[in-house]
Image: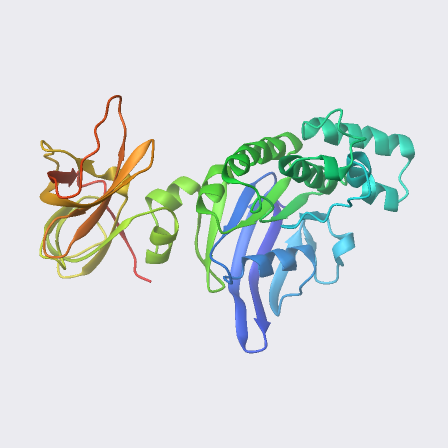
Length: 359
């Protein structure tokens, strides 16, 4: 028996001459939480619709729990779907919304009640069963939708941006709740989102998709710290992209001359040779700021812009010849915020910038 709940093999989806998915392959382990992340129109929702059976692939194979899905209709698949627009029934109670699928299938009433009670406990809505949907909050409606999707005990739960309509604070709370629920039920979750923070918070792995192609499939840490493409580096969080040419090399350490004429020291660069171009990703929080900064790479600069964000401040610092660095500084106790026009130093160690590929 396969160790994978979902096996996506060389899936292609065309709509006329438009290629929505181009040779997509992913193996998803049982109990894994994986996010399909990318901008609008990248193909992530099309892939979810293929998984659910509402679209058929033009080419390729899809297996769920070891079975080929080519001829399996949506209602016969071991999956369930939580929509962006929850599609709850406003005239039914919370309990009746949750039990709807079992009611339609004519399950035994005692079994239905048992499962509804389990679901109410799972999503922490005990005591809400007889409440009308109109009497519940946005977060409670999300929990009802998740409970309704899980009561059939699907092997795979598909989620299409279900938290996007919530405000930021509630959305962050529901991210934690959703991961807890996933761990408790042990099902495989496949989550579609365009929100990078959401994907990083909840996922075991993330598939970053652009123009129907998976740019990178990896853990959140690897995608953030070691992006494989320029798109991944810039789409996941904030970064400084720095172009240059390798001028010298000693072991795994190289000297790179940037397009602005600055010389940088970069380690972990075994794959680069003298004369080759290099594209660096340098995260704003990796950069030190202050009058006494003396890292492997350090430069005089002038603060060009300041954005105070409460727990941290974002600076844009000019370091000469049109080169501007974005820097995030976390606030310590009694921290003071520098002002536009102030002189300062910026610096980072040679291991902080990461050499990535091109587009």
